[in-house]
Length: 463
Image 1 (tube, helix red, strand yellow):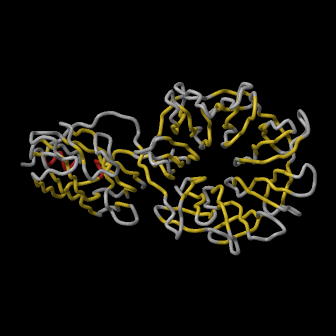
Image 2 (cartoon, one colour):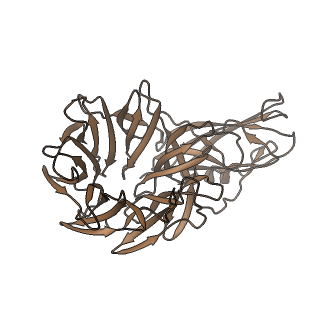
Image 3 (cartoon, helix red, strand yellow):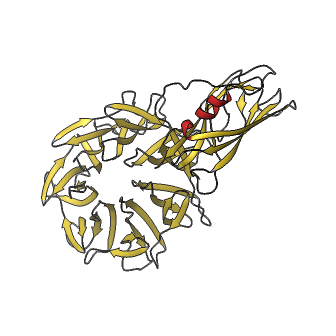
């Protein structure tokens, strides 16, 4: 018997009590994430690594298939973006206009790499004059590109700014000893450039470059600025001590003030990682990674002084690489088999109120199965997006499941509380206004007795 069907339809909150469905109140909790694995679908692809994500949730990066190849990903669709004639390529950054920069190898014996800009399907080569190698690393909102290149002019490795067809070489002054190389790693909308310079003592130093003026950004050792936002906040990592491996810590630098920003439970692991900041968005939310007391690596967010961890299901170690203005995070995680998996973590919300329950059918099968020694109970429910808002990547989140029972068709076993079941809404991943779908919940019973089952529907609602 269906209990309180009207309220159930309005709020889309499922509860199973024996053979009855009833409504439960949603518990307050932190904003959830929906995790999407990134697996390049090209022949021979063995590994995918994202490098940047923009406000339109476009992701770029590199996949490996007999060498590296650049890709662009948008809502489940992969596009290979190797420049013509390239034998290998890597995409390093994308701005909110969708312009992508990276580098490629055309197997020319006279040089090793060219830089490229990919803009709406058109390629432009980015090679400073007389360069034998060029590697663009970042592009800002106005299309200014920074990176590094190699030529025969001492010290041989230089940073560059490419702006409307004009190259500017950037070489760090001799702050401490001879500068051996300079590399730009980021640029904001104001044209402030961050990067590294390397000295003959094999130390790495950070810098901020603005209108020809260098400012040092240095912790104790090996300071590596990784990201800068339009407010001029700089984030990265630095090392301390004299024993190797030196412990690495995350930092924030603003207008000359250098601050360590390790999560409070961060502990230095045997490889020297305590924490590292990898990216920052326009609102100042920081994405990074840290080691806990068990030496497990987690991705973290730092937002308004509060830390939170981000770990995909089945992860045994997570590294954050980038973040966009929606707080979506890209990165890699380790699985127990020892491999790595690329992911996008989408900042989602509970969208129960946007949907309508059309019908429910239930059935019981007493045949024992793995995970269900007392049989299975199946709920088949049909839903419609009753709102005017598309829902991207809808997933059910199990919030209660009593008696040790398991959701056997969860995305990732074992199907306990916190497990997800991705809704089948078609290849585009969108539940459009008026679109319907059917969800099957197969519950493995540990005992033949009354139990409760609650789920929320999560999604990214995009007006």
